[in-house]
Length: 445
Ligand SMILES: Nc1nc2c(ncn2[C@@H]2O[C@H](COP(=O)(O)OP(=O)(O)O)[C@@H](O)[C@H]2O)c(=O)[nH]1
Ligand SMILES: [Mg+2]
Image 1 (tube, rainbow, N blue to C red):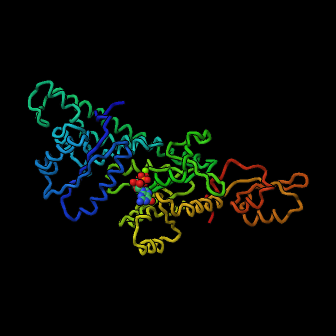
Image 2: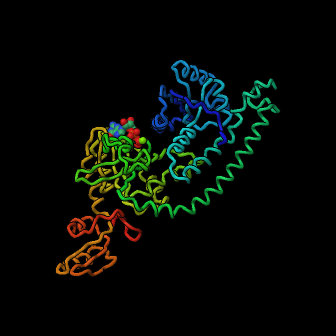
Image 3: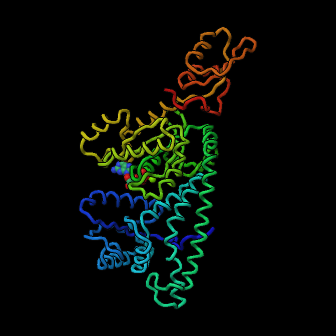
């Protein structure tokens, strides 16, 4: 495929920078930097240094003043970093200036998020959305990759766009045309894929083992929770589930039931506008799940805002009827008990845990088990004629799909909940691989 940028692939150690122009931004800037650290680590890049820089005004060239910029670049080199990651948005020209100054890769938060989405995009729609966002991000940045041609070609200048009619400039034009054509094509393809989406969802519902998706903001502790719950049971060993993505693990609940738990791409604060569609498409996996586990960081002062955002987006994705277990994580970090009480009052039914200490995990697994037993499944029961009471019970407490008579037995096909299913277990013909069908809601309430 046509490569949009010659980004150095082997970046190992990053220095993070956020420039603050207003004192009021500072409290949030701290948590933004923490989040960026998490995002960068997700890409497998070490974080060496992290700097919150204050600047009284926005400078055009480096965003901060020239002196400060030189100081930061020197620090990055001195601490063996091979990449600088900005939490601020960098204009294409600023990115170029920084790379020249620091003599290493310089990227911004948007590009980090784009790379994560690219790693996590599973469906065709998600891959297209991510590619579209990537192309749109790259388009104004193409000048960067052809700069060296101008310098080598000796057309002089060498300062930004100074070498106006160099080889590079012509090449950029060609590339831009290719990129624009590609963007148009992706848009057309996306239209087609979206129309097929409904069918895909239907197929997905036939999953034999129940699936739950962990959703929530980056840094809430989703991956930690998944690892903790699934222990050493790595999926690869399980041929049965081998077709699922690597972020899905099997969890065995205390009552012996199996659950597949899937980690999803995290929400990020101030998601760049251009990435909204790509994010939603990447999260589409969660919509396929039987229920959602919404993980929140109880120690984050903004936890309520995050709660609202996550719910709103899940609803936009069509998951509003799904069961959601609200999980407040990191309780070990909360020293004020009143805070937890307030959250418990405000969000009834939520579970309080610490994925690190293990506190509350038993209760959480208990809740998983409860939801699973409420799951509706399709069964055929072979009931002796003289047990009319059981046939009546089925009619009263389940959705009967069909009845047949065979000798002195009644064959009843029905959609039953977990409790009734247990009660009638000895009469079940054989466990059906198909859990809930279209007409049966996953959680009847
Ligand atoms: N103190 C504390 N830290 C936690 C807890 N759960 C996760 N963390 C930390 O929070 C950070 C983000 O966790 P991670 O699972 O990667 O979050 P994700 O982005 O939601 O997957 C990591 O540094 C974890 O060690 C917890 O219960 N208590
Ligand atoms: Mg994670």
